[in-house]
Length: 176
Image (cartoon, rainbow, N blue to C red; front, side, top):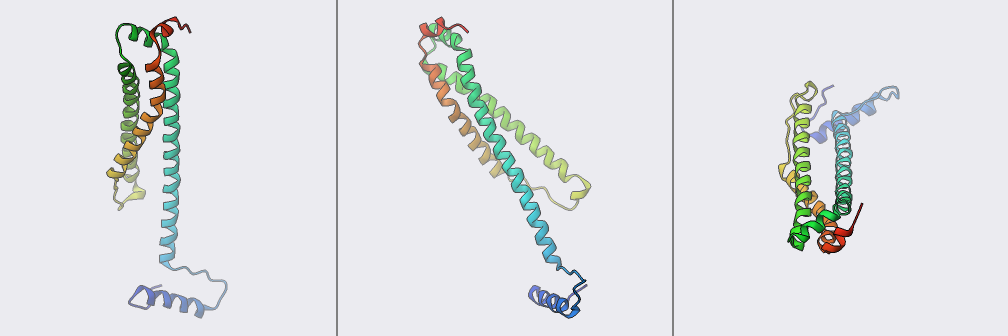
C-alpha cells in the first residue's frame, strides 16, 4: 500500500492511523522501513560474529607461533650452540629467531588477505548480491595486519631472548 504523506514522519503517522482504523486483530502489518531495519540488524550481527571468529583465529595463531618458537628453541639447542661456537653473537641468534617468525607471520597475513579478498569477491559475484558494491576497507585491513604482526613478534621475544642467552658449551652438551 502506498501511504499518504510527503515526509517519512507523515507516512509513519498514516501507517499508524491505517493500522488503528483496520481494527482487526487478524491482520499483521509492518512498515517497510521496519523490515529494512531488521534486515540491517541481522546483517550487522552476522558480520560481528564473523569478526569475532577472525579475532579468535588470529589469537590462536599468535599463541601457536609462541608455542612453535619455544619448541624450536628446545629442538635447536645444539644448533644454537654450534652457531655461537663458530662466532654468532647474541644479537645474531636473536635476529635469526625473529626473522624466522617474521617470515612465517608475513606469509600467513598475506595469504589471509588474499584468500579473504578473493572469497569476498566471489560472494559479491553471486546472483544473490547483484546490485551491491564490494568495498574493502584497506586501511582497517592494513591496521589489523600491523597489530597482529607486532603481537606475533612480541610473543617470540621471550624464546628468542632465551635462545640468545644460551652458553655455547651448555648447548653443545644438550642431547635430545
